Image (cartoon, rainbow, N blue to C red; front, side):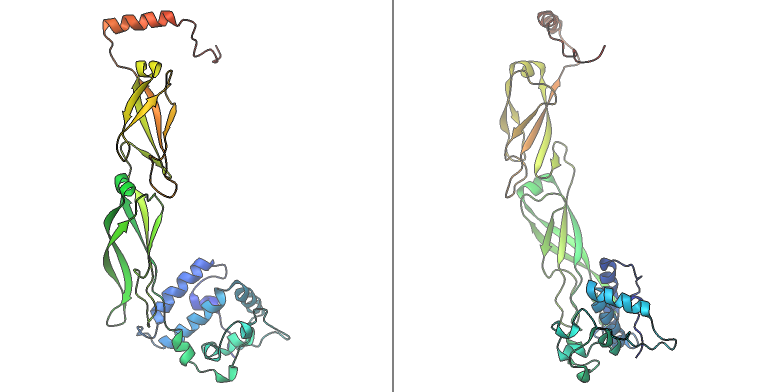
Length: 321
């Protein structure tokens, strides 16, 4: 029997990670799928690609194959398993049927064993069953204003899917969907729409659409998870005496109590006023004491009087001199 180089069949290196192997398989399987491919010997190539993926996607089978690969083929390209070789992956007991066995080569069955070896029928019923190929998942990004994420909205999403045209060529097609965005979405969250990805081949199911939400910068609020942070300017008298100040939120404005003796950088929390969800976020208000650029003569005199009254207050006493 001939030796099978599964890495070469998929066009990947021996050190290729599982993600690269899966990507290579999906690309080649679509290229050679007999229902759409015009390539010479498409069915045989599709079978080789499927067999290679069957081995390399499974860590146990891949490890065994790597051992066999080191053992190598004969000079004429033929192969016989090492003396006493027995697969640890137990192919024969792994849930395969006689129809499944027909899709694998003698090389595969000599390494991993097989059920119904006498009934192998290349291109038979079991192989045709496995020509159903699920469509590719599609990923799209959707930018939302913070208010849209807070309230929920309906948005139009455009994305590309791949499918076979009348001549069997793989082409890209633009698809448009109206999507309901639930309230409380945050940056990096995904919405999954089942069956809205690329169509399957040979009766296979369609892939899914994954929409990743991205929040646009907001002029007032910074977003941290579900929490919102805003800076609130207050006057020196409000900081010194305390005050009740109307503060904007993504919902309606609320009154915030600023305590006496408030300082710049002090944080006050409006519970539940962040983004919605099972556990709603909060709105963090950061106080910033603001001073006018110009004072009236009377205000200047009052500040001078205040300075005299509070001579004992030394806010920089902890600093080295």
